[in-house]
Image (cartoon, rainbow, N blue to C red; front, side, top):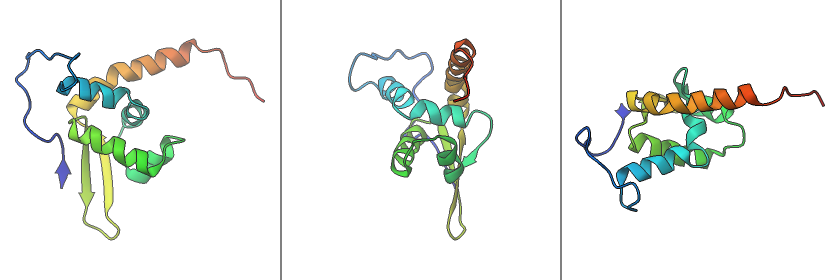
Length: 123
């Protein structure tokens, strides 16, 4: 079973008032740029991961925050969720086409930042 964006897509090219508090686009931006959203998108950029693989790849995130972040990103249509009916259930997450499109410039930003930082010293 795969889950994605709840509700229907809005007509392409429709303008949003991102400064209005009820704007769908504003909510998506808030979820992507929140404390953990960007890290989830970057972690999923190369391949899909199970919940615990994702948690282990993002140091410092709690299970609760990861679950909340994933729930929001799935609802926004950026991340898909697949549940395997096993005991215990295996839940896998990956980027949708929309998520890859949004994640690409974030990954580029991350790569630019890490290229410009001075080399790490041992110690």
